[in-house]
Length: 285
Image 1 (cartoon, rainbow, N blue to C red):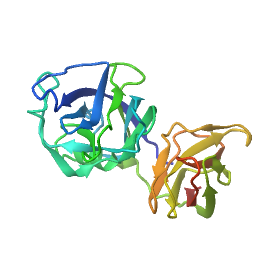
Image 2 (image 1 turned 180 degrees about the vertical axis):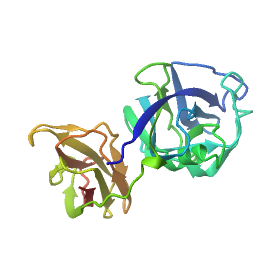
Image 3 (image 1 turned 30 degrees about the vertical axis):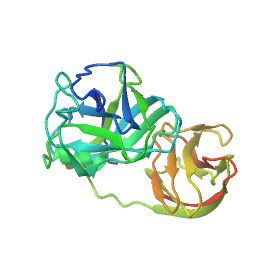
């Protein structure tokens, strides 16, 4: 069985503001990103070192984790991390000297609709850093500037459990082997409303890799969560962040917590709405 290593790298964070274009904000316990109006826009820049990863490795997964401690009016606004193409320093960074970024090299986009942890998949981006295809100058996070009143507050306390973090799982290439496996899958559909509806329960005790793909078949937005259990009775939310699926969108979900039983909980995010989702469960034994 292929073994892998997971490492967690702290982040150096900085905030910039269009309303104060020449101000250096430095280190703060919390920072803002989003747009108040056309004259007041915030962005957050994040820089993480990946030099601890040895040479000749394969990046399996990389996740940017942040904690949102204030969301304002809880509007469904999508935020995205983009790869920065120029170097910068938190000690001198302002809106007027902010670095350029790659508009096509980005991580997963997520809607920050309520307080809590959010995990952005940045695997392809970190792999490009690791392979030196682009320099690692960090990330810049912001949302579609056409929306007002989208400001979110991010916890950036250094050495805190709530501080931004990059978590990377990798494996040395020399350990990769082709091992015959048994592939299993199943498909089901669920009708959803404002209360949680649950998928079939899967026994994952003998599986090595597990992935859900969930499609919104055309209704209003749906929130999904992975839930785990040790006894088929008491289910708790997996440590992964809930995902919002828009109309005709498909997302994937991978459990972070190992447990014997697994299911998906789904509900519409707005009261009175209904949708239908299709779930593909795929695993290797």
